[in-house]
Image (tube, rainbow, N blue to C red; front, side):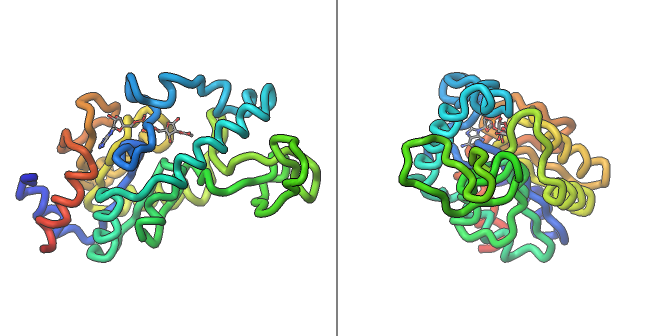
Length: 245
Ligand code: OAD
């Protein structure tokens, strides 16, 4: 795959690079995105029912089981060449920040050291009333969701649901990284979910070059300097190859 040499030079010269990823980066690992018309998760499932505090109150078992199914999907998936390319980028760039909206942990499994998780991680479980992480619980009963061993409330996945706040430290760190970088890459996200969707604009307003890499023509991200229509699992490795090999 041919990469525009201006983009390669931009990456080579950048002192500080921030990358924001979305579900598109994991699509080539076989994990469905959310908003792709035919294959996206929200084409088949109702987010109000499955990814909201109200949905959990109404039907906690359904929500728990849906996340258990997704957790399994994620465990069976492998990082793809796009994830791997970002590991090398982290090694090569002096100040590198990877921000992800994905909850699948595939960046870490590929080898990325520092990952800001804006929407949590499906592999972790917390107490639905105290918010603390819980690692073990009673599996001898059939009750789902399981109960918190400390207070008896239902356990839930450590992910951000619609209407919930993002983890404060993660959001602050993401904001700082967008403000401080000189090159910002948004990869595989439709850019419709705030506040992550604002990060490219924050970077642009702070003077960074902004590249948007997406399979779709239509993303909500404004105003990108460069829009690249490509699969992240092909484009990111080609970029890294062109910059450093
Ligand atoms: P979306 O499903 O909204 O967008 C994924 C984007 O990736 C789409 O624009 C696709 O065209 C693009 N895409 C698909 N395959 C690709 C590939 N191989 N290479 C590059 N791009 C590709 O997912 P997100 O933007 O991540 O939130 O969604 C944001 C949030 O909405 C998610 O974190 C989730 C969801 O509701 C929570 O669960 C809180």
